[in-house]
Length: 560
Image 1: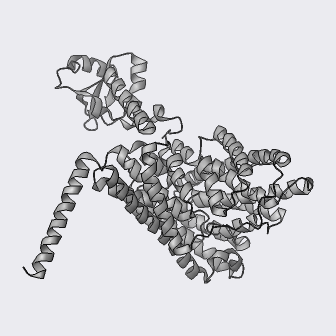
Image 2 (image 1 turned 120 degrees about the horizontal axis):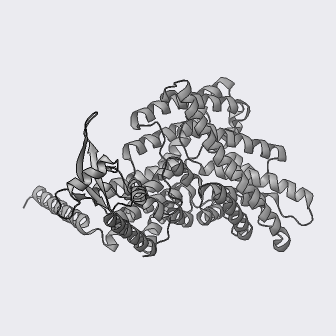
Image 3 (image 1 turned 45 degrees about the vertical axis):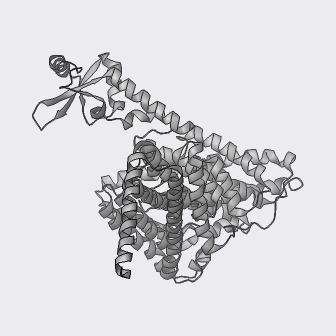
């Protein structure tokens, strides 16, 4: 047999084996070993996506601003001509406007909130076209000077990759959510060089439960993402603290309790500023009939105007965050930079430019903590530790309150800095800030974003599972011998009691509650001026059974 025929036969056999394996996975779902392999592949892919996203931003940013050291971009930008600082964000915003107008139906950037919604309501899947467009838009925004973070876009990009895999293998909701969790964990780990926090972030923020069976594959993916990061950057931490601890625990802990209160208020102010700015942007766009493609450009122009005097708002802000953690800023600088960063992030988000809130929350938190620490150490110098310790605790406290993720955020702070000796101070501040913020918003920035769109996930599965069940999938068709009689259905329709077949059970249950009828006619409107067409009937008992099964499945998944 010739070598060519042997190679061809081996290739054909391998292809047949792959096809049979894929068919088996589609039919029965992946086995444990197969799923771990999938988790590893997803982790590597998401890790490379996060790495290339970061490196790409740095390369393009260096090209646009003309510097080889993007780690000190803010300092370098002070020497650039004012018109360049003004024009770059505006030009980037214009490009972003065209990208989002082409790839989305609403001009809105997809982010972590959409990943959470996909995990809860869409069988672990997110929009692919809009997701890719959003990643590209955020890439341009962060490179050109937008004031946001790179982690949110990377998380959604990883979710797009997970969605592709889930669609490819026709994964069930449970399997798809776990694949989604693997992708998110790897993306966060690769972004922060934080494998422990990445795994917990996926469970705490995206899946929103700590299923034991999901932990192993998510941990595998998280470690894979971290390895990709360390192949490029090594095992160094993102920030380096000047000294360790110096905390007089029993005396100084009350100060960190109060810092938690301050950080919680600042976190709420940051979130509400973003939401109020978004509402104002929507109102203004409608009022002056502004094309949505120009909205990011106008926001970019506003950012450029601020950056002329305060270039610290450009990009993710890690230089300023690092200066806060090392105590290189004085009190008035910390306060002014905090206010300006909140304004800049609000403009970026309201302008639909893209990016995330994680890095801005870290920066705002570090500045808040530093300002608080400078005051505390000046008032009580004999019992106070370093003001940089307050900056570290403030960074974790504000970020945890914004993300609604006290566990993973605390670990991210530790892994970003490598300082595990000050854990008690950080945990105290984080717990207080999170407790305060969850009373004033819907648990977190992401869940409040969803609530503003009418997706209420913060209240738990009892509140949103009904929205995942379509009336058409639960109703009894009129041909069904167990369905309600057509005459009885038409009587109710004439009384105005009916529901569209494309509606969900969260719209149907209030009708049952209000009318007390055992069934609701299901109709569709065929055209303007025409009467409804009867599909069948939705029975109250069927709706309750379907809801109960959803609750049971959710409980099994969460506690398995």
